[in-house]
Amino acid sequence: MTLPAPQQVRADLDRLLPLFESRYLQPFQQGEAANLALAMTYSLQAGGKRIRPVLCMLAAESLGAPVEAALSCAVALEYIHTYSLIHDDLPAMDDDDLRRGKPTCHVAFGEGPAILAGDGLLTEAFTVLASDPALPPSRRVDAIRVLGEAAGWRGMVGGQALDLEGEARTRGADPVSLAELQVIHRLKTGALLRASLELGAIAGAAGAEDRAALREAGEALGLAFQIQDDILDATSTQEAMGKRVGKDEGKGKITYPLLLGLAGARNALREATERAQCQLRSLPNPHSLMALATYLAGRSA
Amino acid sequence: MTLPAPQQVRADLDRLLPLFESRYLQPFQQGEAANLALAMTYSLQAGGKRIRPVLCMLAAESLGAPVEAALSCAVALEYIHTYSLIHDDLPAMDDDDLRRGKPTCHVAFGEGPAILAGDGLLTEAFTVLASDPALPPSRRVDAIRVLGEAAGWRGMVGGQALDLEGEARTRGADPVSLAELQVIHRLKTGALLRASLELGAIAGAAGAEDRAALREAGEALGLAFQIQDDILDATSTQEAMGKRVGKDEGKGKITYPLLLGLAGARNALREATERAQCQLRSLPNPHSLMALATYLAGRSA
Image 1: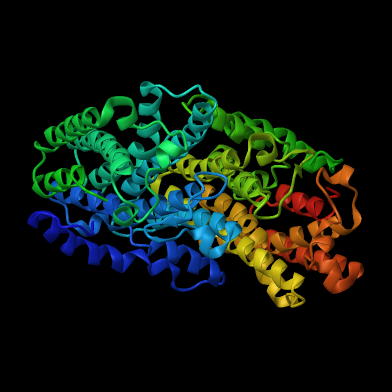
Image 2 (image 1 turned 180 degrees about the vertical axis):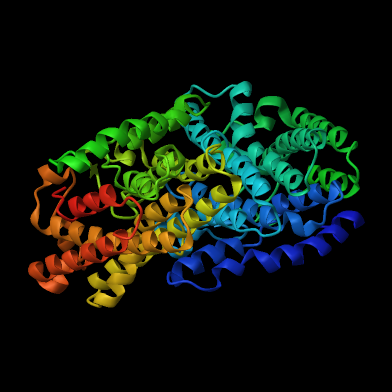
């Protein structure tokens, strides 16, 4: 989120990101596998937008909870997100050599170390959550269960597997349908974004109703985020995105602009964002979270 | 453990393994990513010896606890072990095409799906632990923290990274020392075996003293296990092992027989096993666990 943001969003980021960063690299300062720690911190510091941690922290605040309660959840989410990028970028997966304007982890450190760096970050996410003294054990296990289901084979990992299969089918002239595309996105991108808000709900000790509202807002935001990603891949430049663009179509990837046209995709993006806002409105203190959701729908990188 | 075992060990395995197997594949029966579930269950069913789960269940029983308390810990340990084999076998790592007499996961399903199957199993280990109603939340987070530290970059993943680096150094005529080899083994194999006993201690509600005894026994057993593995690689046949043998030396891997000679390695194995037995002796009900430790030191596959 390095682009101009409205005042509310900018103020929230200036307040939350230093807190987050102070916790984020802490675990990796000592250890026998020094090069592995280097590979992990390389990817953690590659300039991500920290969307999931910020969503999580703002979700906790939207319930009136102190942001400190959500810090380990925020850190765990970004570890999971970063590991998934490292593994998705591997030659056997999406085969990307550039990410956020820097060489991807396997280009910088080699394939074996990159696989291990991903494994290390995935594992550390759960270790950090389990060790957080700011949350009672019952809420820690709740958060670990929700994160595990969102990140695992029923969620993000499953979505990436279906995406790989879909690309192979599309290359074989048996393209995926819109319904199949929606399943892929719900799992691959949506599950972790939904979990970002749900972990914020758990950290903020939400009641059942507020938790459901945050879950559903997260579901809608996840969809909006993916549509926007597809639109940007179709319309943006490599310079603005910090990664190769226009590669979706070249790789036979089915996207929203391809299926619905650019105007149709923009319409679907607007609808999903409005659905999220509608859920958030009823929370005790939703303004920052709503401002971020609006900003994300209009992001240009 | 398909080889002849003494009566006590055989009776324990006959009692424990059906319980374990009934829980082990349960999570993977429904889900949208069907091929991914296939790849995960393929590796889970590839005929492993279930050493870590059995150690964990016997550790809980050595404290007088019911084995059911340790079931999710046992399952989580085997998920972690299986994921680590899938990733270690990848072309970018140890590049093995045969494991337990069957094609490795990436040979059977492709590299991308194998990476994801490993990621899915790693994640599921923590999800299963977090969701276990047989343990109070405080013990679940304790188990997750111990497992995460043992499996992650400070433990098993770190050991595999150091092992990869060590092989490259050895090929470059700068071989690792015995001290470095011991660090690699302590992390790569030892950490998860130690955690097997410590998770049993947590599941069995051990006091501090019994927990420390089980930890230290696990540390010694982990070393014994690795020495025995090296001895078997140097002396056994591919048929008996179900994987390629003699490849350690071919790949420039430093092993205990190479460093200490075969007799010296067998001596170190005996010492480590005795150290483990000495720790176990003081537990309330240690006989099954001690019998298994003795059996493992003499295993031939």
